[in-house]
Amino acid sequence: MIAFAIAVIGSLIGLSCMARARAEKTIKAKLLWTVFGAFAIGGIAIWLMHFIAMLGFDIPGAVIKYDAGLTLLSAVIAVVVVGIGLSLVTLWEFSKTRLVIAGVLAGVGVAGMHYMGMSAIRFKGEIAYSQPLVIASVVIAIVAATAAFWFTLVVKTNGAGVAAGLIMGVAVTGMHYAGMAAVHVNGDANMTAPQGMTVFDLVFPVFVTSGLVVAVLLWMLFTSSNDPFTEKAEAA
Image (cartoon, rainbow, N blue to C red; front, top):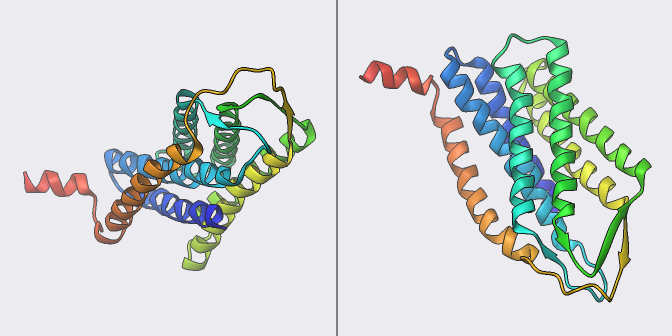
């Protein structure tokens, strides 16, 4: 439940940033809000949600560690891929084709982060996946992400904005749990002890940092009514 709440909060903020980017007049302001949206969706709604959910992942009798490098890479993948997807509908003129491509990229970003994050797991054994469930998880992410973008860009009401955040939250968590349902663990007691960080060591500092990021983004969304770059130019 906490993971879903984080996914929805990050999605609502990220989609609000996307809508704000669409409304801005200058390319610099559009780019700024697009980057904010990418961090909110990719970093908070996707990455942080994944590792909060992974707090409940356990292999009986096994010590689980995480490769810090791959974990960081998974966050970068989520932010970058989602950012590219958002840019197609924030920096360019709206079209249905770009909307679909943006939704596909966002869905791929969700899935890519998830499976890269899973590859960072270290324990005495290996993880295998059920291919049909893996495919289903990716489809869930793409379809729901596309629907969330559509609600944000086409149905411009407060209710639609909330619905978009909930749908994007479903995209992220639905993909995660479908992907986890595909997992098969094969233990091997003869393997060497795993090296790396525990999931709590990863989540706690990122959770605190994400809380600050959320606070800053909310403050900017509610207090910045004009193009910040234009204001600076006028002040100069």
